[in-house]
Length: 177
Image 1 (cartoon, one colour):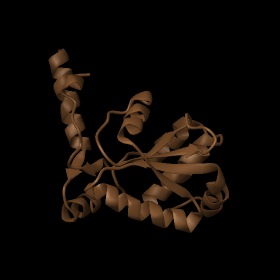
Image 2 (cartoon, helix red, strand yellow):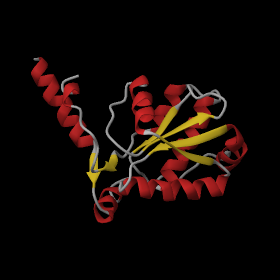
Image 3 (cartoon, helix red, strand yellow):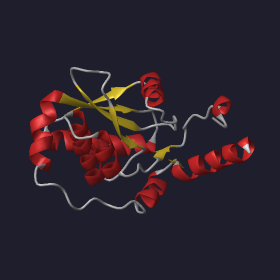
């Protein structure tokens, strides 16, 4: 029974994670991802107004194609709404993932947190995504960190793309857990 559950978990993980090594593969996966088209009326005002209180942090790795794609999108977001975007190391990203019970799948992983509190974090992307989807997730993270019930925000985020760099580390010791 446990072996069957482990096999099911492995299959689900493989279905949810899409390692890419080049821009063509990345674009092929992104073409499958639905694009957010509707936003709440307070969307832009909330993002601009909350920018001084929050920071976007991203794990990254040299040569990671999705990381480069994400940096481009987050840099544009930062310029548009006045947000600061910073890198975090692999160890910090893995610790954060573990604290929230997320499997470590590789880079990039993007988090939003209040500048004044490094322990209040919300993941907004595992892998890269379309710019509007990232903006929606950042907006929802701000809402969750300022009072909206987390279950409402997480349901609205729906799912992450899982489009990560090819060098995603695998830990065989975690198989079946």
